Image (cartoon, rainbow, N blue to C red; front, side, top):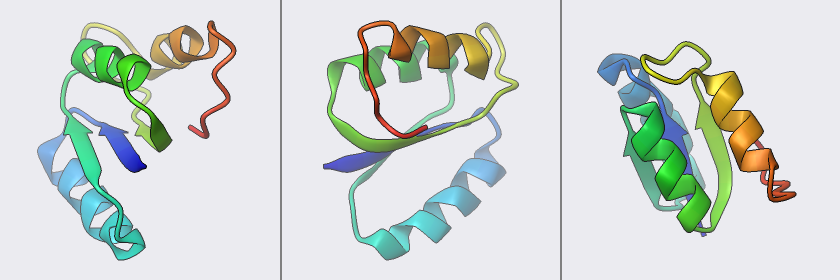
Length: 75
């Protein structure tokens, strides 16, 4: 299993990755909401760290789309 981060700010994404690296799980990073959503829906992640304010599509909409197929992954 792995962790997904969807965050458009590279510095914040890097800081989150540093903190989560202590879990010793693979971490996938996405700086774009649409790209992140596509990958989260097609892969099996243990949990997702999701920014709310993303360009193009916001984190709330991404969360709704993830939850549609009754996906209970922690966000």
